[in-house]
Image (cartoon, rainbow, N blue to C red; front, top):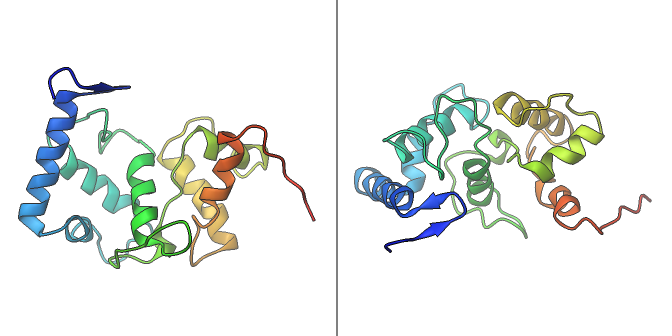
Length: 168
């Protein structure tokens, strides 16, 4: 796709990403098995595995699709993908079984940061690994079995600014 560009992603980024995905499929047989190989006994969140998996998905270093594994990123896209794959409910298909939803980390973006900041669940200003783990920990206090359960509904307020909250 010569000349392909979507926001920050160009044809080279997309090609390198697809080549890496293809290699993982050849090496492991599935993306689930490739991710599962990154989970270590004793991991309490998916974050350590996501860092390793990011290095596998972007073997040539940082790209617009996969952040640098050592750069302190919150890995929003990868955590969102894992939410879809590991949670099974009306929002997420949950077709993977390699880790329980209790290990998931909140996928942080501008919208997901607004509400936790307004509720004083975090005082941090950088959307990084530390903030992601801090916010996840606060939601884990409420739902230890599924700390990202409220991600979808909470992000709607930022995505749809006209939405209002009616407390009962």
